[in-house]
Image (cartoon, rainbow, N blue to C red; front, top):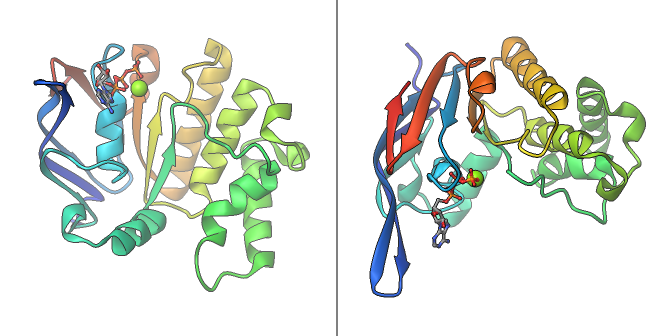
Length: 227
Ligand SMILES: Nc1ncnc2c1ncn2[C@@H]1O[C@H](COP(=O)(O)OP(=O)(O)OP(=O)(O)O)[C@@H](O)[C@H]1O
Ligand SMILES: [Mg+2]
């Protein structure tokens, strides 16, 4: 058996609110194997985004650990953690977070440009290929404001995939889309999973979309339980 791509143990997160403490996550355990597809559902405010940020190393847990490919994030320095993230993870945010002043091609290429030793020609070729895969080849010179909501989300997926991550974390990438366009984004995620073996952790509040994943969990009252 190969080592899991992601392993969270006893993960907890509290937020301080003046004198009181809000516990958003209690003791979350989650293991994701290479190529696995996992859905996390839960009501608005149940802590889904908080959990995904912890899993992706974008925020620090109050308790517990996250290991990416066997390396515990809290044991790494800032630089090493950033490198491990860049090499292993893709993140699609709840809101696309494309950079408005750059074209789509530039937005998609950005994560790879941050790596040392990659040639501009290679990055451009990879970014163009990915834009084709998400059906946006003819929009490469558009800026995010010149795209529809669904196109922006597909571009955000392409950007997350440019580094060929072993694990893609997506936070309601279809939250603002009509059901048909939302299904299209999921078709895309599943095709990428099938073709490249990219493990998926998708956060959604829609059971219909969650059912397309192999394993499902619900986050409720700060606890993650299998569905
Ligand atoms: N930085 C913060 N400081 C204080 N409280 C926070 C912070 N971030 C999140 N929270 C609280 O934690 C709870 C969970 O937030 P989170 O964004 O994880 O929910 P969610 O499940 O992603 O919701 P949604 O489905 O609406 O996106 C919310 O009640 C929110 O108010
Ligand atoms: Mg959220």
